[in-house]
Image (cartoon, rainbow over all chains, first blue to last red; front, side):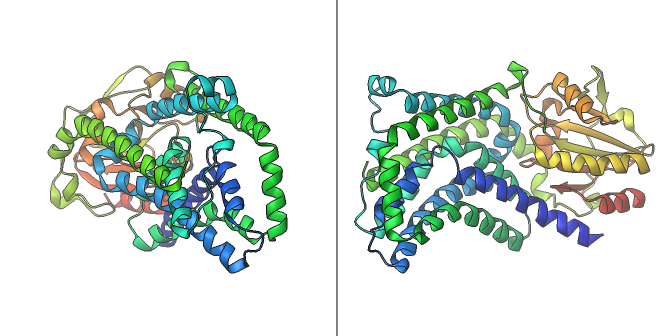
Length: 237
Length: 186
């Protein structure tokens, strides 16, 4: 009896952590800008050890920012209650924010009219001179892009909220960290020349990638907005 | 943007977002949180010694349009499933509750209530029909359970005995074996 409950107590949060982590990892607000930044930060001549060190600093920045939001919501019970009981309202607000950023990403004219030209792949983070700057870029960029990953972060808060066993909590956090880190470490492990070639290729197609990202964000934003009960087009899970 | 500026902008955004969220949530819940006994309640332990009786004036809007007074279920063991239609784990819990309903239905009343304040009885009716679930579904009217137990995660399940006392609370998916064991012991 207790074995089955134990499997449920660990297995269900682990699956939830896997999907939330995957959503954060491939969130269109983080991709493709942060991987491009990572590719630019790594020199072709960098040793594998140095590449892994730079990547670790960037991933640590991302994880600290995700953990920061989750810990605040988890430790202040009234915020946790608010998130759980207002999820669809919050999803509507986040959807509007994502739709706005999608339109800005999609349209050069709108971006210039709103003086938001820095939100483009041409305005990517400057090349860092040390590991601290890499960490701060991961931290700052993920904090700024948090609305995009908002539903996954709220989901993580809910998952952490069900865990009373500290060991399970640690395992679930490790699962989230692992899923978020995989794409970045994959880049770090690619040979230096191939990485440089890939970065140049992405830079050359920056506008195309912006348009694709913009369309994804617009669709994601619309989907989130339409999930609100007032529109009657919600999906029942 | 330089990394330092980006980090500072990010931290400012966090302070603004968290400040706004905290302000709204404190306004919405703090008064009730202070009144609730949730600090004394431990999940998965028998709450009998706390003598927490279900408030007799609690009523819930049910998906068929009726209102269910918790006092109407006096003498029955009640399993309250606090959930939301967007919650994927709640679907896992539903399959367990279906099995429980088939084996223990009658002496045990199952009641699923959404804690999401934007979800309506019409939405709950859609949910009940879509999933083909036989027990009552409704909304946590007045956020009664949410405030009383300071619910931060779904599903959360509350077991009430035949004398109207809160006996157990479990956060997360609850296994069929544990529920069956506890219900038959009450």
